[in-house]
Every structure is written in structure tokens, then in C-alpha cells.
Amino acid sequence: MKRIISILMLAATIASLAASQAKKTVKLPEQDIVILYTNDVHCGIEDNIGYAGLSLYKQEMSEQTPYVSLVDAGDAIQGATIGMISKGGCIISLMNELGYDVVIPGNHEFDYGMKRFLELSKKIKCGYIACNFRRGNKLVFPAYKMISYGKTKVAYVGIVTPETISKSTPVYFQDDAGNFIYDFGGENNAAKMISDTQQAIDAARKKGADYVVLVAHLGENGVTPEMSAPYLTSHISGADVVIDGHSHEVTPVFSVKDKSGREIPITQSGTKLSHIGKVTISKEGIISTELVDSVPSRNGSSADKKIQKSIADMKENFSATVSRKIGETDFPLLATDENNNWLVRDGETNLCDFIADAYREILGADICVINGGSVRSNIPAGVITYNNILNVNPFDNLICVAEVKGQTLIDELEFGARQYPKLSGGILHCSGLSYKIDPKVKPSIETDENMFFLKVTGPYRVYDVTVNGKPIDPEKIYTVAGIEFTLFFHGDGHMFYGAKRIPGKIMKDRDILIKYTENLGGKLPEKYRNKTGEGRLIIREK
Image 1 (cartoon, rainbow, N blue to C red):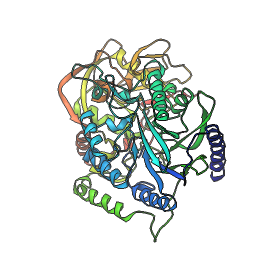
Image 2: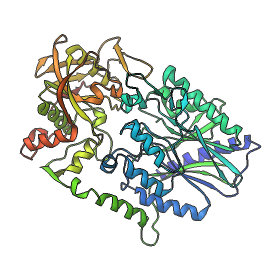
Image 3: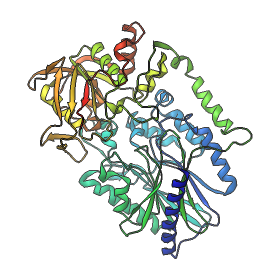
Image 4: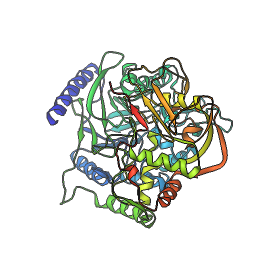
């Protein structure tokens, strides 16, 4: 792996050298510029390298060169208990303590609501940037940020995925009348996002930028191709390197030709601080990228003690609450495999069965459907704590019940299955209902400019849909429990046309899981032992 990474770094270096030689007026830095970056931390402040390790490594780099910056490419403040309980506040405080210089919002920065996000945006000292996030015709944040390293100027241009509207909660981007007032330029194959990015690059160059770093929350694989970092890069010119996020990929570097034919390196550091991303602009003007997977020990430690204490103090404030026992299980309930790969985004798991059963039974519905992207963490064997429940469902979702026509359910199952075998947070897990997917059938889904479901235009890959063992009746009205985000707020692009809310049947996700566990006597039954569930979602073999 180290050899492969070295080869990739060499390729990036050669490409960047050619680029730098083409720019005769560039002011070369007096010393190396080191840009450390993170992406998709998702509140993993103590996971892997952790914020304390990141802080120590930043200190080490600062001893080698005075030109060190710290950058985040989105999805930092949501994903675990400490974020949810503080609604992102604790994470922002830690990022301020680490001294981030450039940050952009990811789609999950909006998960606590637009009002809360805008409050947090005023608390982070360096401020957010984004060239394609608008309210009406006005940018919410500056399109770019210029940092001078001696006489050398580097412009950081922020780009947020247009999928944010469907990947967060769409209602957060609407006014009280349901009109979208916020926009990320996703229409017409993201043409507006592309033009916004090009305009920001051109403006930064005009202001004297010697180098332009794109800080993007777009992703490479498993996202809408026209909204990916490679696609954007191939349709613009004038950038030197792309720091990416969103798809949680470990990408030391790969290069894409931009509109002018230059090879532009793209890099991404995984998730939850599995790596520290590092971009270096050398004294010769050569750009190289690498990923750091461990921090050298200093004075017997690989962590900054000050940051460790700050985290410990934050955790102490809510330790009694999160350690409360809810129940127990002698087998794990899974959202991911042992390598932290998502299981809930392309198939059934026992954890999804448990959650869907809880929502359906506690709220008294015929059926429950939940999106795989709402399930965020495993429940390990042993004592089930309140913290486990919060980690599984960190969004503080409301669960409600709606009346839904059978054909609408079939259509939404089809929409959720459209990306298989690619991972998709929109795939639906169920209780009281089962279905099969034939991956040999080509998806035939039509969506609007916001990637919201419109209709099925061809053969269905979803088949053999049953409700309580009987074929689903397309004309029958069923009561369906589900996440408000999915049933009514168009989460992941689901629409559930014609769904009617049943008044009074609504509870928070965590309260339902606690009550359901108590109803089971505090111990999970054998029906949930099988890691791949009970056969509610079956993929036809090739």
C-alpha cells in the first residue's frame, strides 16, 4: 500500500510540476506550504487519530514550516452523541480550539435545522465558505478565502454538493409556504454549480491568487455522477488541487484532466479521522498529496493533552445520561461490517429489522419503512446504553404514521432500489412488508432537478412485494410508520405522493427504541440474531 501511495504521489507531483512550470508569474513560497485537511469526521473526535492526534501532528508540521493551515471539507458536526446532544456546539468549540483556517458545510451540517446551522456558522472563528450555497440570488457565505503565506497567496474555494437538499432535510431549505429559498446549483446537470465554481476561481485569480485549492463536499463514487468531484474538475479550469469529501473514500490522490487539459489531483481522507489529509506546495511550486494514518509519538504520547482534556470535560457533562442502561443483547446488531463498510445501504441487517419493528409496533401501523441512511452505528453485544441508541439514530428524528396507497409503496421501494448494487442511503428497510430486487433489470426512474422522485418510466426491478405474507394490493390504503424526514420531507428524494398524516401518532426515534426494548423485557429475542435479518429484503442472485 505504501508503494502504491508513493507511486500515486509521484504522479501527482509530476502533474503539478508541469502545471507550475506553465504559470510563469506564480510567486513561489519561501518555505513549504502544508495544508492539513479532514473530511467527514462525523463527530468522531476520539476515533482513530482523533482531534487530539490531529492537533499534535499540526504542531509537528508547524515546527517544520511556518506555513501550515488546517482545512475541513464538511460533515464535521453530526454523527454521534456529542454532536447531537450539543446540536453541533461541542464540535464547533473543538474546531476553534484546533485552529481551523478554512471550513465548508457538508450536507449533514444542516441536520439540526437551518436556524441552528446559521447560529453555528457565527460561532466558528474562521467562518464558512461556499461558492454555490445561495439564498435567492445572494451567496450565504463568501465564495472563497485568500490566505497569504509570505508573498504567496493561496485561494480556497468552497463547493457544497447539490445533493444537500435531498441528503439533509428538504424542508430546512424551504420557506413556510413550501417554496425552496436556498439552492446549491444542482439543476441542469449541476451547470450552475460549475459556473459558480469557475467564477470563484476567476475572481480569486484576479485578486492575485498564486494557487487555487478547491475544498469540496462532492464525492467521487456512489454519488450522482454530474455532481461528483471528478465531473466538476473536468468542466472547470484554473484550480490546482481538489480536497474532497462526502463519499468517505480513502483517496491519497488520483488525477482528472480539467477543461484546459491539465492534470488536477483530487484527494480525500476517508471518515472519522482514519487519516489526516496532507497537501504540500513546495518551495519549487510542486503540489503533492498524501494521507497520514498515524501520528508519531512526542514525549511518550500521540495526542495533544490539552485537546484530550477538553473532550473529557465535554463528555463528563453528559456522562450520566448517556451511560444509562436500556437493555441487553448477547449478539451484535449491525449497521456496518468489521471494516466499517455500510451494510444498511445495500441489504438487510438485523439492526434495521429491529428498528423497523419498533416503529411499527409502538405506533400501531400495518407497515414500517425506513431509509438505510438513517441507521448510523452498530449496537455491540452486551449492555445496551442510551449512548448506543443515540449513536444508532443521531438525527433526533420524529417518527410518524401516514396513510399510503399500495402503488405508492411499490414506487418508493423501486426508487430506493434504483442505485443497487451501489450503496444508497435511500434504500428502504421494512417491517410488516417484504420485497425482492432484481439487479438485472435496469433502473427506469425519472427525477426532477433536486433529485426528487417523479415516476417510474419502465420495468420495475422491485418484485414480489408482500404485506404480512400476502401480495400487496396497489389500490389499498395502508398505515405506514416511518421517519418524518422520508415520508413527508422528501429525504433522499423520496416523495410518497398522496400520503396523509395520521394525527397524534408521532414520537421521537430514540423514545420508540427505548420503549420497544422495555416491552421486550429488556433483552433482545432470538429473531434478531441473524446478522442479515429475516429475509425482508432479498436480492435475486445473478
